[in-house]
Length: 535
Ligand code: XMP
Image (tube, rainbow, N blue to C red; front, side, top):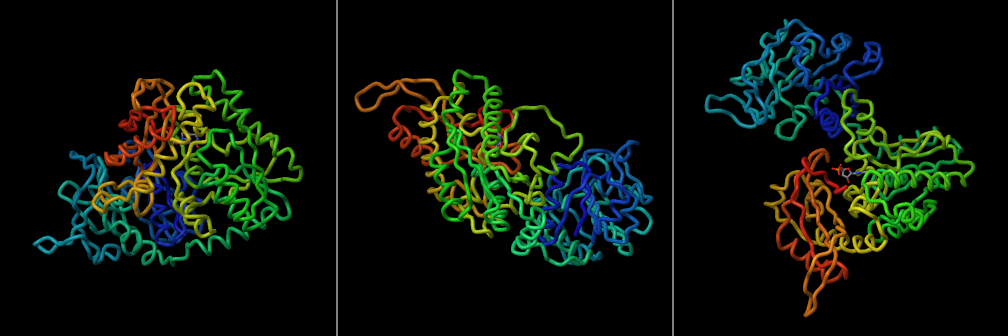
């Protein structure tokens, strides 16, 4: 396995994903783990990530010295390269020219790491790499023992290698897709330099995970809050595979779910998979609590608190349950371990997780090691339908944050139908190949239709009325807004450039089929400055 030390780059997680894509297990830890931890971890290789700091400034992150004494290969990326250079006796200086974004790097292919890897050859016969570069500082003197591995005019030492000790470093980022040969370079590093085999695959993972869950819970009973979302669904399927009827799922319907969601979840888990699921219809209770409340944060708090209340009541009925299962995934784990990443609270998020400790249950989190795309692969391998596993994310407070202002059942019913039409049309509209390439940051790996080519799409209910005309009559009805975004991390997002014909069709269908709505608008705001949800 590969140890990745995180120096705070935005793209550290991508390193782990690339390494895992190469079939090798890898984990991310903060850069300041102890020397003992590094020695005991058992890494076949170490990768040092990029980061926002400057090694020139005194008190900035350094690599645990043990990393360089392990006798295993080390790859430094960006800040990782600079820290490596500085600690091994080289020199880092503040570059006069900063480089951000696309760059062409001359590959000095005499190293084992880059040998015969290049994108094109110059007329002079130099192998060149198209890469994504981002740096201010740069290495000016290599440490003793290193030779040049890559260079650009602005950054004469863009890569260096000490083949004896198997230490390698790049100023550019091989983990991002904009570095075309990144996969080849990281693959070469983990397979040939570190000697790792491709052993990280889903079928093996399932049998290991099943064994682990069995060993952990023994004969105890487990409860799980099933939301219908990808993470809790895959967790349920995996735990059910391991312990069958010792698992009971609780599915709380707060009346703010998408059209037919309850039925879909009950059919899928209850009927098809034979999982024990308690379906709680708490619509009336939630609507009661939400009546008259218009402030978005207040609504979120009420929905969150009510959810816990309902779940707790149900859990209380299952007397012999000792475990609470949650669909926590690896990015959640990294996120909560990460330091200095505390931003402002823009919205108080509500998840099925985060249930109170008063439940007095032990936590079972079988997806803690997995990235989202791995969770999806696992779901498919466990027999969940592709369509369910590759669904867009849906927020915990559900339609509660998509009905602006006061939530009423009447509004939720209208919104559900409008939303279902939008989603159906997105799924049914194929995306031409040329657009597919342009759409880039889509959702699934292959964008066969507009649903897969967008990361999240939904309708929003606006409780304002406007005048319209239908047939010969005047109408005075509500407005629905459509939102579709493309994003990789949901932190920033572009609005999707959906074809006008598609938007026109959706608008027509909603106005014709959903009585009570006579106007449809399309949201063309990016994030930032807007957010993805409207509340
Ligand atoms: P925003 O609106 O903040 O949303 O741009 C970013 C992503 O987070 C989702 N979201 C939530 N997910 N509980 C969740 O589980 C929540 O309370 C919540 N609020 C927003 C949103 O759908 C988008 O994918």
